[in-house]
Image (cartoon, rainbow, N blue to C red):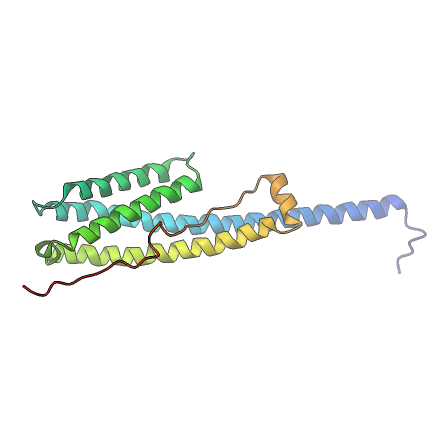
Length: 198
């Protein structure tokens, strides 16, 4: 049995200090672990965007074969792809910058796919059908990767905002991660019309 009357004060103080240091180290490491999960989830998002970026030149090449196709739409997709590639490879780009360039890429590709629907001879080719199928699969993987990123970013953000972790987060420079959000106007479903009169 511990006799506090015989235990020197310095030993009690040392014990308390050791416990505090262990608690700080444990808290710091738990933030680091969750931060690593966020970074891994972000890497998975980038992998899917890279897959999509790799498919774009093939899609653009196929679509360019349609002589009367709107070149401005192709240019917008190519520029958005280039912007995303540059931003994703820039070590100084913030998460906000990367998310903004990814959203721009999403928007340009969506416009291209909507515009392509107006060209039935193009959409009937096997090459285009294959590319469209690959892009649809990639878009699904992008959506899942974005959701997974948002889920783990939420866990991290909540962790560093809760007391007492918020003190450690501020002291050690941990900052919140932004979430992927839908692009403006995406909450309204697009109108799809089929013209079967021909």
